[in-house]
Amino acid sequence: MTRVLVTGCAGFIGSHLTEGLLKNNYDVIGVDNFSDYYPRKLKEENLSNVLKNENFNFIEADLIDIDLNGLVEKVDYIIHEAAQPGVRKSWGNEFEIYLNNNVLLTQKLLEACKGKKVSKFVFASSSSVYGDSELPMKETSSLRPLSPYGTSKLACESLCYLYWKSYGIPVVSLRYFTVYGRRQRPDMAFHRFIKAILNKSEITVFGNGLQKRDFTHVTDIVGATVSAMEKGVEGEVYNIGGGSTIRLIDAIRKIEEITGNEAKINYLEDQKGDMRYTYADISKARKSIGYSPAIKLDEGLKDEIDWLKLLMT
Image 1 (cartoon, rainbow, N blue to C red):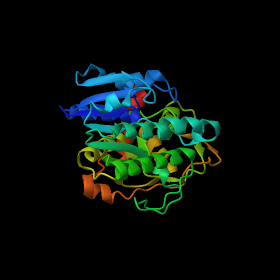
Image 2: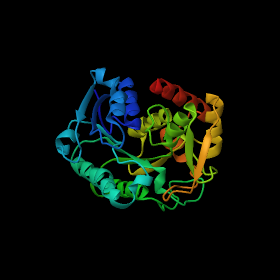
Image 3: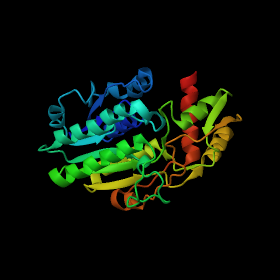
């Protein structure tokens, strides 16, 4: 059976991806260190279903510290989701964590792939690499990250490219655009908004709410990532977005409509590092890997709301 290494397998995207690969009859080795960015209990719940699957082998470890050479030798594909997330927390002294968990870890994993028979190395990047770029954002657009987090992701992309160019490691980088859905991290906007609106408590919006985002459902992210692993052109970068853009305030109105509760909004000043607009041109991914986002925002929000209702009971 074909074996895939998924780093960060207990996270929001990593756990969904692990489930998707197992359903597609892949053998999966998952590694996660249960970092303290958010509660361990939530990550354990993310893994609760796949731990019962005989084709899943879970390793609790920090990838910085383990024998990556021995691990890479056991797999056919690598999907590298492990990273320190968060734009706002990446400033100041915290940046050292981003250097270690994003840049250094990616370099070590790529280094371990030298001389191995890895069929594809898929790197999970971010729309944060674009910063103040023209819209829609194309893979050929200028890259001017606005946060240390975005800078760390761009550095990882550069490492992937140079290891492909110099050592032939078959890398593919995917720029995810604002992912949402079940298991979304508690620090992310929709998770915070939905929970507060359900509780009839105040939500905080940084800026005036007119900023626009290209929201991408995690189901579409999983499909795109597996397709990139199977069909992606090595050395290439692909935008993975939802295919449309919406103002943040309009997304909040949709949550109000679905929940039947009115949002109590506290507007605060813009935060350093936050992008004003994101909008992905996904034509390259459509053509190359057959990517076609299927989950509309209304449907995806309803599903995340249903999940959070269960979580809150």
